[in-house]
Length: 76
Image 1: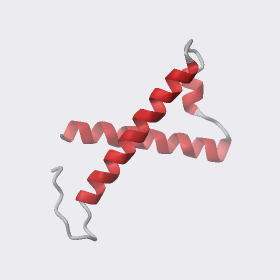
Image 2: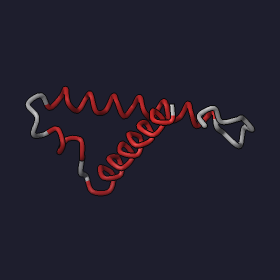
Image 3: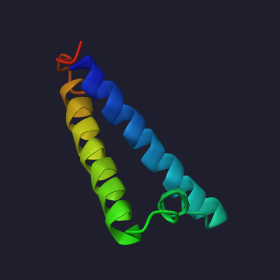
Image 4: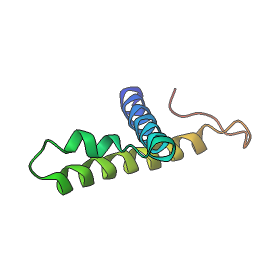
């Protein structure tokens, strides 16, 4: 479970960095990565869906470990 949390955390960070690049510099890293691939739309959709799922998973695990809500962390 720790490995899964690490993978999802990294993917969420990559997604956040990509949105920061889009917002500050109008530069979409996902498009640049997928631009060399023949099926651009499919590649982008897979990346965005994977990062979206990791964001939902990270949010769920964050809510399970919330110190404000006085809940215990089940991912340790």
